[in-house]
Image (cartoon, rainbow, N blue to C red; front, side, top):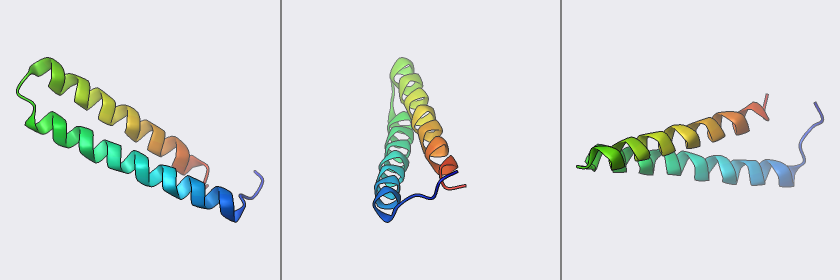
Length: 61
């Protein structure tokens, strides 16, 4: 795999931080939701953003 430039690493770091924040937010929303459907949707969205995070982390290895 080709080495990433400094600019690419900064962009990747920014995106990783954004995905991590979305995971935290949706997990928080899910834990405070009263409606089961909203809770499920928030959990699914948290999982999707976690997958995005994991995929991006793969570019660092």
